[in-house]
Structures are given as C-alpha cells and as structure tokens.
Length: 161
Image (spheres, rainbow, N blue to C red):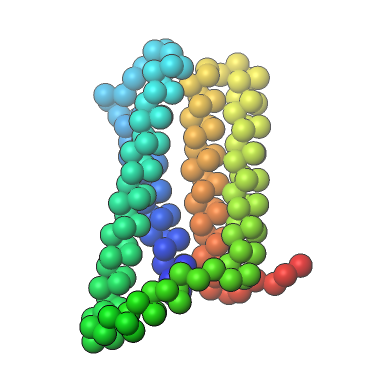
C-alpha cells in the first residue's frame, strides 16, 4: 500500500471513530433531549467537530512519526536515506492532483445530497435536530466515501478523461 493510501486509511479510521463517538453520545442515556433545542445540539456538534479536528491532527502526527521510525529501522538508521524516502513519498504529482479532484467531486456529491435530504426532512415536518443529524451524517459519509475512492484510485490508478 502506498504512503498516500496509508495516510488516507489512517485519516478515515480517525474520522469513523470520531463519528462513532458522536453517535454513541447522541444515542446514549446522557444525551440531550431532542426538544432541548437546535442551539444546544449545534453546540454539541461543534464541540465534537473540534475534538475530531484535534484528533485528526494528533493521529496524523503519530502516523508520520511511526512511519519515519519504521523507515529508519528498515534502512538501518541512515538519516539521509530516510529523509530522501520521506521527501519522495510526500511529493505531489499530476496523478495525485487528479485523484484528489475526482474523490473530492464524489464527496461533494454526497454532502450535497445530504443537504437536500436534510431539507426534505424539514419539509416533511421532522424536527430541526433530525435535519442536523442528517446533515452531519451526510458530511461524515461523504468524507468516508471520498477517502475510500481516493484509496481505490491510488491503488488501481486513474485515467485522465
């Protein structure tokens, strides 16, 4: 598996765990009541989003450190060789830009569909909290689908066109 694929899988795993933590809290016995209002649920979602961002940063730092240590052990501790391998893996070429564009397009489609679904939930008379949950879920699903498509394209390649 390539460096970019590994980085994406690690990021997806952190995203799944963050969203699972939110779902567990939202469905748990200590969760706010749906009638408590949109503002309290919005604050809760913002808190979880902030925690997820910090977790993503921490996970990426740990991933890069672990990968660098693994390369150093494999290469016998030659600092210049390790630095060269890491720099070569981090270079972004045209294929990676194309993969990023294609996977982001699919992620935006999912997020846009979720926005329309949230509007439909509101139009059908459900609560605003339900619409917020649909919206957050669609963004999380879009992010996971985007990551999965990205990994697939990194591993199988991509055609221009």
